[in-house]
Each structure stands twice: as structure tokens, then as C-alpha cells.
Image (cartoon, rainbow, N blue to C red; front, top):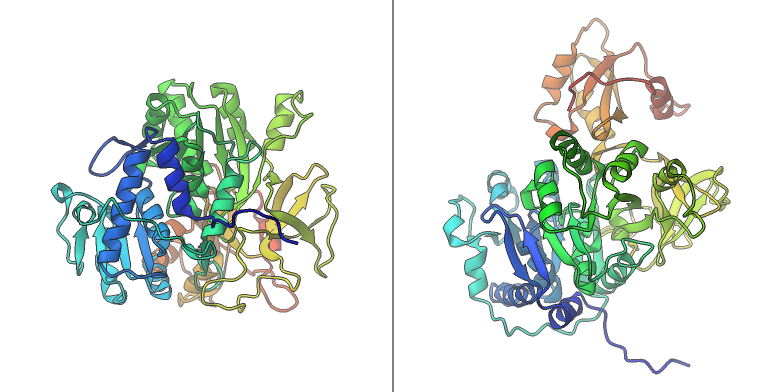
Length: 546
């Protein structure tokens, strides 16, 4: 017997409609390239989003078309989130930090029809334009006064396009399973893979994100998402903040500038901030040098890379700010766990609390989590056993876009294998102990050790190459290139840097090169990365690296 409830679809457009009706005067503040501090309301955002949706339809966009964005965190990018997805198109957010070859692959694989871009990325797009011929035009996120000249075919000014759209546009009532967003992994093992979100998953994810034991966002909050809108849905903040009416403050291209972040927190009275450890290191360093305190900030959620206890301690002791670490993945929309202490832990000494908050956290409702051994047997949550971390839930991908099960990342009983190795304690706090994929996480972004190795061994003086991540005080991890010289050859450290230059992304460049007589291998001939990590566990990168 079914219940007698209205079967209204869960749509991202309904979040925008709710925000416009209930919080029309709430503010969205943005730093942009053409305006140092743009300010408008939820009502303005809703009206302009409708105009953009209508204008895109006038350009010929059809249901299911992928429309890409290559942009910073600001109000125009937020409008694209709602206009593209709400109209029944698919908002494909692209990470501009990827190597050009990856950008070309992603755009072509997604079959993007239109691409919205910040002016800053025009030179990059001009270089790859001949390789992405399927894109019908480029919409530049600026006004006519700041519209740059470009060789891109069919470059359109965003604000001029918006004027052609109607504010009376009516959002279609879609099936909640309709695709709404597309985000690609960074291709650490082979080509990047697309994760295709639907309306239902994103609305449920937004509901979970605002919960007290998750990101704890409410109407009285002012939220600063430093986590990029082009990366894993900015942790759901475009939807969750409008859902509850929280004020939004976007740092635009200044997301890595400590002074700008500090000023925004102070002047806009930011209560909650979200980002990766790298940006908070820049903020803390600026505060230390300037003598400023973050008096308005109450809490920050940090993810993307392991948070050192020293950072948690500094935030709390110097600024009165509590840190909650989180963990998730592109495939998970991305929220999975958040390190919010449980009841009964309030009286613990600060140092004990810092250690708890340094863990990846507890699963939020909507995410089931387990660890298994090599035979698929589930392991206990005792803080000792470690195994492959697997998850499932309504905002976790069931497959990759256009791969139809060939990625082999899901178990027979429907769990997604994260590729991480983890421990879960008796209180449900999970800690990542290792990665089953040999990737390096630097500043919250993935670096492929395999790809660097493949380029390095192409050098005529190199017999074998391996890359591992070693500790870095700012970026958490940085690549170390380990080389076995070819017989009779004497390549130098600089020879390897010169060889890699232009063949890999600049931010993937190893921070150092070491030469060894041999590299350890497994019985099947694979490089034994575990042994290398043990060998170089105490290795210190050169001063001033990265």
C-alpha cells in the first residue's frame, strides 16, 4: 500500500523559487574581474537566472544539452548553475587547472554545446579552440564595457545575451531523475571520467549539507565558499545556501589571496567558510603578519586534503574558530563524512578535540560506509582494522558517463569502491590511511604519479622512474621523482625538469628529483610504492620548493 503524499519532483529550480519567495532581500556578494565588490539579492539572482535560461533556449539549447562553465566563484557562475540545470540542460563545470589535453578530452567527451567562461581563460580557450570544434560558441562572463577582443569563434558577451532573455521564463517541471550537472574526475588513472548528477541527488545532498552535524548552515549564517564552483559542486553550497537563505560571499579570482579573504570575512561578517587547507594556510599567514583576528568567523569546514592538527589548533587558539574536517569525492556529489564531535565529547581537553577533528569524520545520513578486506569481507569499526573504503547512497554515482559499467568501480552488491584505504573507530569516525591508487593530493587537487612517470621514462637517459607524494608544509603533499639512470648516462636534476616542462601541468612538476640504484618491485614486476614511501618517509624537500 502506497502512502497518500503529493509526488512533487525534487528540482534545483524549486530551491531558487523558494529562495526568491522566502528570502528575496538576502545578499550575494562577489569579487569579480569587472567589479571589485558586486552586491545583489536572491531576487536579483532568480530574475537573472530565468533570463539566462530563456536566452540559452533562444540560442538553440535543447533538453539534455551539455553547457560548460570555466569560471571562478561569483554571482554569474551561480546564475549558470540554476539557469542551465533548471531549464533541463546539463551544467558541466570544468576545472581550469587541468592540463590543456585533459580540457580538450573533457569538452569533447561531454559534447559541450556552449561554454561560459571568465575573460581570464580566453587565451587558454583560444589555443585549444581548433580541437573543440563541437562547441557552438563562447559566452564571456562580463559586460560590454569589459568585453575583451578574442579570436574565439562566436564569442558572446554574457550581459548582452542576458538582455535578450525574458524574466517571465517559467521553469519546466522535469522528472527529478533528469541530469542536472556533470563533473569530471581529474583522470589519475587513464582519461578523466564524468560523474552525471541528477536533480534528485542534488536536492537531497543540499538537505544533508545544511544539517547541524554536517555543514550546519542556516538563515543567520554568512557563508564564504572558497571551494571552487568548478570543483565538485562547491560542496553543494550553491543549493544549500539558497535553500536556507544564508548570505553568500564569493571571492572570485582572489580565492587564494589571504588578505582578500580576511577582508571579506571582516567586512561581510562571514560566520562559516569552506575550502581546502592551502587557502586557509594563506589566510592564517596573512593574519599572523598583519596582527588581525577573525572575530566574525565561527567555524570552517576543510576538505580536499588532510588537515594538520597544527592548523586546527591555530584556528581555535588564535581566532576562536572551530575546524571540522570533511571527506568526499566527485563521485559522491561530494559530501561523505564531516568531523563533528558527538555528544559527550564536549568536556574533552582541547588537544584531544583537535585530534578528533583531524579525522575525516562521521558519515552523514544518506551515505552508508563500510571497509572490506581483499576478499570483500566487511571489517569491524574498531579503530584498528583497515580496508578498502566503500560507500553507497542516493547522491553517489551508479556509473560513469558513457562508460556503461566498464570502469569496474562498483561491487556486485552495489557499493562504490572509493579507491581509499581507511580505518573506522567505534564512534564512527573514519580516517584515510592510504590510497589504493597511486595518486598524490596536493592542495586538495589530484596529481597522477603514473602520468609523470610515463613522461619521465621517455627521457633517453632514464632507465626507470617512480613518483610518490612526500610531505609539504603548504600543499600537504608534493611529487618526488625517483630515477634510475640508464647505463652509462648521467642525467642531472635540471635535465629532468627541462624534459618534463611543457609535457605535464606546471603544478604537477615534481619538487625534487633523486637518483637511486634500483627501485623496489612486487613479485609481478610492479613498482612497490609502499616500500618507496617507507624509504623516503623522512625526506625533506628543498627549501623554497613550490
